[in-house]
Length: 334
Image (cartoon, rainbow, N blue to C red; front, side, top):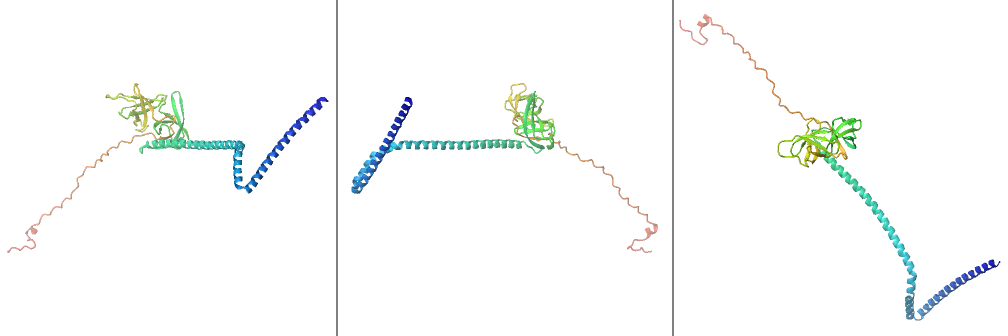
């Protein structure tokens, strides 16, 4: 009972203290409001009675209240500044995101344009390798390059339906790529130049020395040639082109460039990159044009003697005719 009564007493004391504080605050607010209203009424009366004094009092009042107003507005101004800063930050973030999106789109367009420009240049180089004396069978895309145990092959997207047959040369934008070995209806397999079984008759463009470019099963070719007479030697940077010998690869196609001339068989790097052939041309096997031979005139038949008409024999004159005078002649006297 004592505890309950003490608790109720403490709650009553607490409530009474809160009520007194609230009442004191309300009284203070009412007092300040009354003072402000009284001061405002005083200013109005003074303004009516003495305008000059009222103007000076208004100025003094503003000077006295300006610090209070500034202090009261400080939190509001700070909140506005924070809100403006946050709004500017959000706007900057959104703008940065928009700019990043535009930059990414521009980067993708630039990459696509660069890829198209590269493909156009490769197509231009590929077209530059065309010759009217060679028969183009079809063009295709090379892909799926494979390497195993010295074999270097690639697959092209064309086959029997487009007229492709084995032993047809395959030409890339940078030069000779290889020859067709196996053919399906819509695809074919190409033996690349670096295949261990590849043999291409070539010559050095600078000196004219001929030989064979043989595959090594790796990434380079070996140039096997007969040492020619003279003091000139194979140099690094010499270009190898096809000779047309053998009736398979057309002459003049770029094949490789010498990268190591100090070996017994110089090493050369293929100009057509096996891992990035791209669009290729498939041509018919090269056949050298026939050598023109001057046609000899056909022997004419011997001239036969033309038979001439034999004149008829003149009959011998009779004695009477011999004695008769010719017409127009005078007869001699008897």
